[in-house]
Image (cartoon, rainbow, N blue to C red; front, side, top):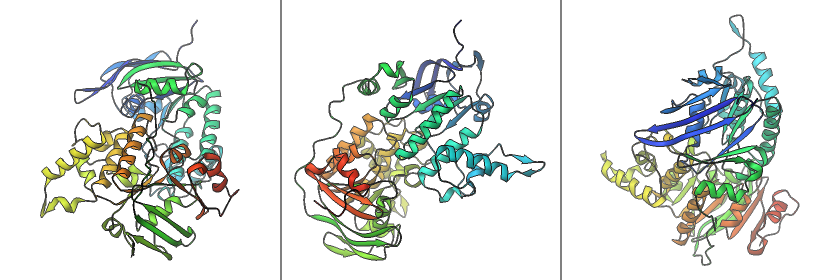
Length: 500
């Protein structure tokens, strides 16, 4: 007798405003199985998961739990069925503690009082199992992006879930944190829990999952054992074509020095940082978590105050005390946290694109026609896929949100573009588009600085790479020196002090 699937969907379909974003998805997931769900941005992955988690109600189709047809009308109803989701966008209250967030809506009590000791103890145990060094009483607003992701995972695991859904859980985690999460998911699988795992990192899907479901433009195009699909097979199924070249050819010619930094210091964070970047150049910054790369970008943008050092723009020494100073000098910064710091999720595309450059569209009142025309031009240039420009950006896929975020800074007409993890949480097709667009910006004379934890990305795009360690420049590599092993030697301190 065949096993009854723990979770099954039959013909699951979803429409928004007459547009079909998910068509007839039928899949069965068994207890003790990890199913990978992959596809390009906008393929319908998050919509599929949100239906299962009770966030959306399907237009058509059925959901069965252990053979019984169920109606999942809310996230609370999903939890009561044992279905719990770790969302791609954080759903945390910054003003509350870690344990208060983990148990939000299902608090432990002793009589009429909250049992904070029990909640702190359970939270600490789960975080320890995840390998996360986070205090249960820490304020969530004070945590890093990676730590917030671990809190979201802990929220899901604290309940006795039978189906665990994870939407891009590793995009903000380092290699050690990812491995800790994978160890935990394998233990969860051994306990008979079904796991649905979404990731753009196909190597992770290959390493962790038993089977993989591929969605393309809302349609299920493949469902197979991971052992029977190579990474190339997965990528081809996602995009429906051969991927011949991921990275564009590197440009040879560079112009004058546009940004020069000399002896920059921020107490406790940065020590004697010096580098220069020219127009037409893509300069990379590599290093381990905590090396100081993001802190450097924040200092250049006036988000942190330097204690020493000089910054020159076009050969002229400047003082950058606020982000407004940086923007007026032609600097632009895409932070690694597009949802928390980059975009206002409830605003439409035009309002987000003109957030920094709004003064250009205001003569007493905002000229909404000019604003929409500018937004439409950026949308066409970056190939942003949106049902309507007026639709809130929260409804766009991660890749399209990132393109809107990039358009927001391009609308300031910068001379220097700082990009921190520019393709985090983005599928391979959208990555290729963004890589080529960055190359085109450099070809037009912009000075581009890329901070990335993915060494393949750094090596594929950049002509020179500054490797940082513990807030210092450990080395500057170029040409034949650019390989992952050499970068890691400097990042880990096995080599130091040499510069190309």
